[in-house]
Image (tube, rainbow, N blue to C red; front, side, top):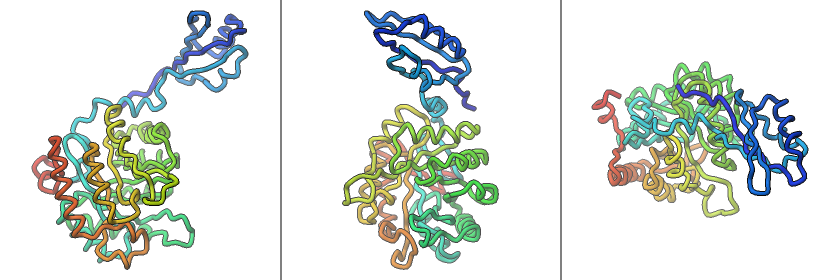
Length: 354
């Protein structure tokens, strides 16, 4: 289990007219350890809080303080995963990281038992190792289809088990977690709920793998701090998912930040996957974005697939037809092999005891 940070440290630059002794006295009154730094013609302070509760914003209000700079990482538990990649994270036959790439695929929403079983068979035959499908949907309009609820979740579970896939589904409310956790293999936290902190904590406490999507307006620090909430529960099975950012452009739904994939993989040990479907908003663009994600080092993809998108009640424009999905999986397998990785499959899961 990752150890939490036990202290916090700051560099404090004093103004030219500051009285260093009075600032030091004020900091010590707050319970901080303080050392004076001589920075040429300026005076600075190094302050450390053994309790890990350094009130940086309050320190900025002390008379004589010009600037406060934190030396402590904002997401220490996430950063502490660096070097712990090991075998990645296994979710049934799906393996994210550790030399494996996995693909999660399925419809935006579970609409009926027979259709989700048909889609499960098709994505499994193409090479996916995990099924996706929404039982609880977050929609911009309250009048849009909100998902089939726990009944749809049971249908998703049955479809995944029939073909030997694991499955992920999005939860939107902490009250759903206890009941859903009995069925799900992995919990998806959607972009709009990235900062639903009660949901993050409740989901984390299940010990289930958590697929955490980046909010469309979140910077990387905010994303990692959301992951930090899950990690504080002792659950290290966190999979980060990049799905695109809001922008002024209209040629895609969201701008996909593929640069964040290698950036994160240099700094942390959590798997990073990409959702090209939500970024593109157009099924014809999905394969190219998916290939680019694997080339950038992503540990997997989550792709919307539907055989008859004209009949679906949500996200029809971005759903990839099964034949195109099968072709994409062949390309993903080849791209993964270029840097010594392999596409996880039901066969590889049996071989490694997954």
